[in-house]
Length: 217
Image 1 (cartoon, helix red, strand yellow):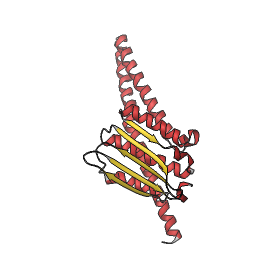
Image 2 (cartoon, one colour):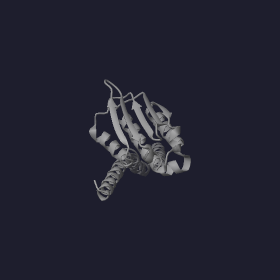
Image 3 (spheres, rainbow, N blue to C red):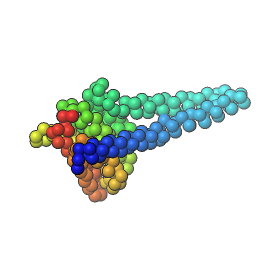
Image 4 (cartoon, helix red, strand yellow):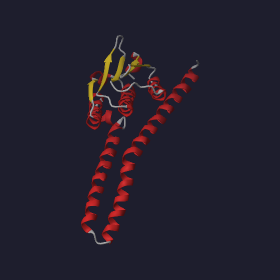
């Protein structure tokens, strides 16, 4: 493959990764804040009609429910903003950003998330960005496809100066090829080697092995 062909292939991979990220954000917005806003609109409409009929106490109860939903929508939007990269990594660093991400998923989905990611702080900016996106998507897909009780995430140095990301869970095995292909595409932007393993009846593991050149980019 010529240098020009390699550059085109890398650009195509990055475009696909960006498209997958847009899809993920679109789903999160639709399933969370958009649904809350639609419900708030219905509640406010009903409360206005109730006010016009003179039932002030009932209208107040409706508006109180609307306030709760509005706060939920605001919290979810803040969480989405916090998850956007590279802002989180620049502000608090890799291990702290992953820790905050893990705590959010643990509290929302009643799952134990075990992290060993301090080595990620020593990686280059591009490597941190790609690994953060991969592990975030892996965690998100694990809780979406079932009810894992534990998710383990590690980033460790390997011989020669490379690095390895491992994400394991004890939920239903990941059998969706589209999910694995999307994760592999992200890994390919760093010339990293991606592999996955399923364990029946429960359990999945993904590995991303970065060469030394990619780990320091």
